[in-house]
Length: 125
Length: 419
Image (cartoon, rainbow over all chains, first blue to last red; front, side):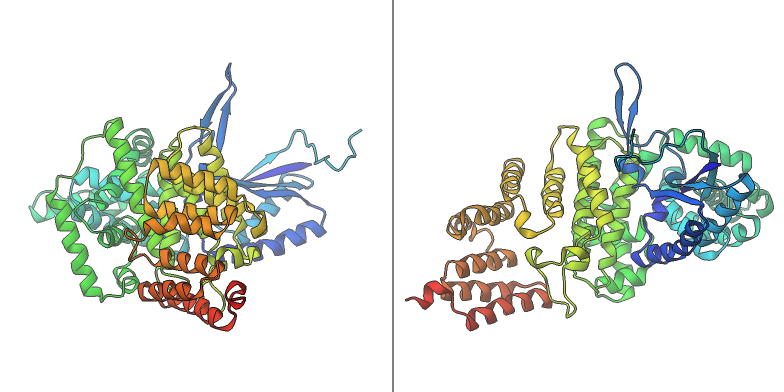
């Protein structure tokens, strides 16, 4: 089963990390990422730029372009993982490991209904 | 958020919004600051025990407000407010407060807090010190060290600045659109001052920290005013300049010019954010000085080698900036681009008329010396470099020019050698 782990935190705090703080978190996360990769659990993962860099397209007729994120929240969507594990219990176990390496904020675990991997390498038939 | 480091980060993050809401409530900066201080102390006691509140900012506003009112009542022997335990259990009040926060005033609250720090009567250094003390909550000692003065001297300076703004009427009415635009412009200029006072200080200095703080304030403001292209431009400009900070000086602390920088040291994440913001800003088709300067910085950031720099576009952008905000410094910068395109003679012809205006400007004589050197006019180059050294603001600037002079002495330019 594929799950998305959506990473929420206060972007003002996260984007104020010093280079050293950021690197320390990434080193700790790297250990978890490597382990998950070896176990065949980790799919694509990404970190998003702050919501100030976001633009929203409202699908009205005609579509309306708005500066900023879709929702203004106290904690923002800052990135996500795609993982491949047996069930919710296993997904939560992964989230707990990540949380230990990168405390603060929250992870939302959402089962993925349709997963289309990156097919730009020419394997599209 | 149970460990103290996390709580501290949350308190720093919440400070501008919480303090500015308390300022609106009490209309007195000192009371608002004391109320926020008190709320932070209670947070440090209560959050590790009871867990963090859902909305730290709303919690701090409510607890700070109650604490300050409590103080007023106690001093006037009126009935005390409910005790600490009741105050800590805030779920309902918190939700109501959060709703009010999200709904209405807080954009203008934060803007007001920043705006009072850039009162036109205050000199630039006081504006910077005040913003760092009040909005960022930087400890007095750190600000004092950054400005190379004693702690009590800095405290006096800040107290005097506060007295000055207290005398002026604080602008508490909600601003109209024109007034809001004026406040945004003044606050943007002040944030850029904070950035530049860190930028010009060089690496390893206490003030280098100011750059990150200025970027934090700009992001905060941009989050509140999402559709302002000049705010996007300002944030992008600072990010793109700050991205180069690791490459701007070598191991010995000497200045490394753009052309000689190791571009692998540039911070890719900051560049990506800066480019995204300038991209967004351009869509508005409302150009302004920050956007144009950010667009110039973006062209440098996009070139993976110095030879790939788009000097044609840079020259065009400087010309646009010249039309928008004519200044000899902008013309000097455009001349550097012209020099890359048409050679040093054309650039020199452009900058020579600027000398009366820029006779005390370090960079003018640095640029003039470099152009004269390229033209083989060694004696005149030496004179210009000597002027630059006399005007250097830091030891690193002086050392940089001295290296130019050393090179002049070692390798006479071909034109002169042929004579």
